[in-house]
Length: 349
Image 1 (spheres, rainbow, N blue to C red):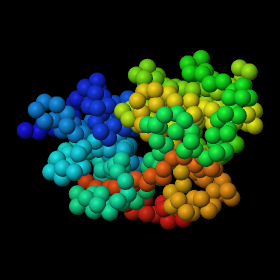
Image 2 (tube, one colour):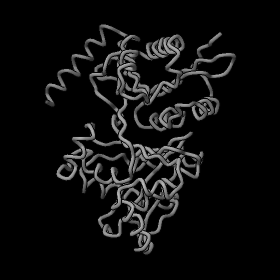
Image 3 (tube, helix red, strand yellow):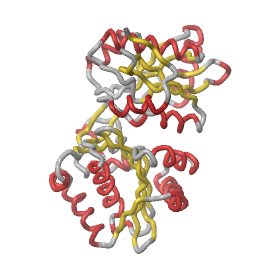
């Protein structure tokens, strides 16, 4: 007999997430706590069988303007056996009920599933449709196989990337595990990168909260790269189960010719591999097919194109997820919300 729980303690929840075959850092209680500190609220819905969690999802809630209610969002979830339709339908109904109780007009799920017809058909059968908001997380990414020995991982990289990793070592680039004492340098590097490459970054408080939530658990590392003691690049890497994710990175204009970012990524992969991870997700490239990516990356710098040239060198396979799907929960308010979204998209267009 299955039981729905919305009050599972965080330690029990995280134990379930970490052990799940689809374990994802965005489904941990800590990710909910991080987002709650910056404008969201969070809840957890678990489907228990014989007293133990079998399926579930972290749900994030964001209030809508004009008192329209809220949006309920499941990042890279739910965690469920997608081959068991009865269990999946039961969990979706439980998620919908929990979201309605929080005045959500729609439930948005962005599953960690490949973009294949069978999954799109299954989501549609459950009452979902592609979200008019589009994807929230990067839909397309490069995933590096780090389950092999180090020489095999390096051999699968582009020759220039492999050369740059070794060049950085020869030129004296050092990498160390960052601590809270490195926060000021990390924030300066993030600000410099944002100004140079024209992309948005979180506030310093966001990165500090992420560090304090995930690093003590062993689920993340802040890695710093320097030349003669001067910090010139940094990244935060996360890991859970068999997978690791490169979420945040920054670099200075100083000593760029010594290729510190290449050495930094390699050390992040080595750390993830030491934790037993077999996949390293570079987290975000332009949502285009491989033929177009390869044809255009040398002349495009807008959006994620600027980082594709760097990321492609590490030899990852191109992966596209099914995207964000939305299930209306409160029809009248949902129509109002959908109309607002449509008008804004038309205005932007």
